[in-house]
Length: 283
Length: 236
Image 1 (spheres, each protein chain N blue to C red):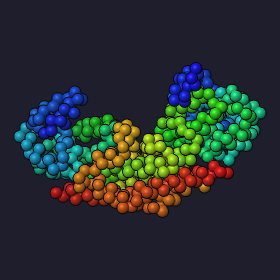
Image 2 (image 1 turned 135 degrees about the vertical axis):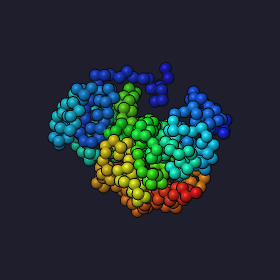
Image 3 (image 1 turned 180 degrees about the vertical axis):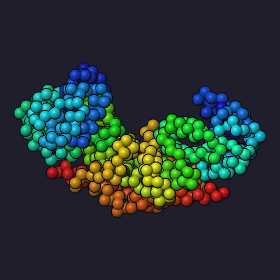
Image 4 (image 1 turned 45 degrees about the vertical axis):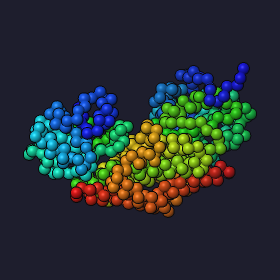
């Protein structure tokens, strides 16, 4: 029988009683946890999180999940374990739980810059590991995530990660060598957009708008334009053409953006963040 | 019911199941609320044409960029009910940003109904008419600035090795998500930016380059240029 390709993975049947654990209960863990519960895919009672900081446990506990200060307890209680500690804490934590981890656990790491090989080296052989790069807007169910499945995973592992990430936004499977570029684009990207919204609002205020209205209009304009790209499927450049009427207000503004090398500044930003991600990955 | 000189436009809009005609007067006599959606330089001729059949039974709502309420009122009989609206393109995907101003002859319910209808295609606010040019510069023209930003972020991704389709998708979703965070958390954009810049991380490295490039200033310039052009157009 021919080997099925990744593209033709058999659809798995979701297990509504799946238990999920979080090592680390910070902002991203809280966002993902909230998203999974809201989607109905995972029951709050089947989720457990650990953190050294009791305040984080209190916050995440408000979602109705179980909390503990024992990383080992999370691992032994969970089918799927999300590694959500800071990147430099990943190896120590995995080393700690190595004695209780088994192939029954699916490990999903969201630690920026931490390679699959690094994770696997800290664990017994033949673990099931998936590496994920999410981004902050998962907090409002509009995340952009990518994931890579290591060799030891089963097809259903990839499917379930994809389904869970899709509950908090869009998600794509990639090869691990693209992780740094994704970090530079969608990982760090929200900050470029916050700065843009801030600046557009400043422009509105300079031209006479009250601040609150300016921020609201700026944010909604940014959201709406992005939705047009996502929903119409048209090229952003074509959409830009369509809103630039002859001798109108928009083309006057575009001229100034081009003169200021607005586009180049964003390419530079993505490049800088990507390169920093590569540097961090070397440690 | 909709009217247009171009039969192809009527065919397109007819696909929504509405009535179509080539008679502007028929639209006015058949409708409680009439939306003026012709090009700005056509507004006065069209209003002059329908003046004979228009009455206070009609609520007129103009979306013509740069056309002042006084201009509209001068082309009509006295004491009409007029509302001026500045919508923007993303209304097409129910994520519009619109503002409106109600002229003196309107009733409170006129304002309410316009607000309700605009809210069905996005967010909407009532403003004083003197802010219309600034809104044009910000939310009217703003989508183009964002299309250029998404295009450029995608280029950045492609330069760093991502396939184009994935780069555009990630760029657009990132832009959408960040804007949603501003709208839904109510936090200041600057605070949100701080929260995603971890010490010595990837994001602050990128922010430094944006600041060096006067990224923010270029957007302030853009809003200003579009606003000034709107004022110029309004003088004609």
